[in-house]
Length: 293
Image (cartoon, rainbow, N blue to C red):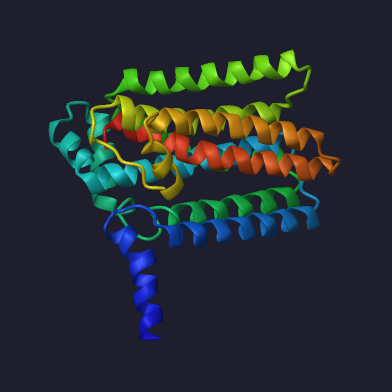
């Protein structure tokens, strides 16, 4: 039992407490948990006959943005950036918001406010919200739950923004990559569905954010926490290779899913998973760079 406790502490607890990122052990464990979790969620939604329509997608995207934004505000509290900004803030409304965040301790660094805890919390909120509004037959209103939670957090994050040029560069690179893939699909006369477009852009956003933060932003400000992407970034091509591979893999996934003879809801759910895995870290990295945490 002592060995097991030491193993868990070394590979799961310490990386969170010491802010050292991921290792091979917790990466594989989190990946396995994520896959099993996604499958369980899919089975629950299918059993309840939840449709993956525009209401579902908009609710999902807003919850993803909520998770990323809360994570970034936690980073700003933990790094001292938010406290520093509060000391010199001249806008009264922003100052009151910063005071609330600092003294509420809601955003203090902890197991439930950092990865993976924050995304588990957000995932549970998402599933419960969807099931509740689905059972009440008012799914069109479900998106207002994450929207109301997101609004104050996102407004605060934007108010703290300083590195606007770098944030704009990330969006521009992601947009260029998306349009290149779209042109390629058009040239091949292959249809790219709406969820496929979102999947490519989300993964491009994640790749672009990592590339800009590590290779183009002043050196040493950020480092890559994930094992595989850290290895890719260590090559001579740097994180430009990571960016390119993210886009190519997303395009390949969209192409393969489109050609599969599976049920449409199964295809949609796979693309939604690709979207979440790109949008969540991509938005977190973009907002972190914007704020300077």
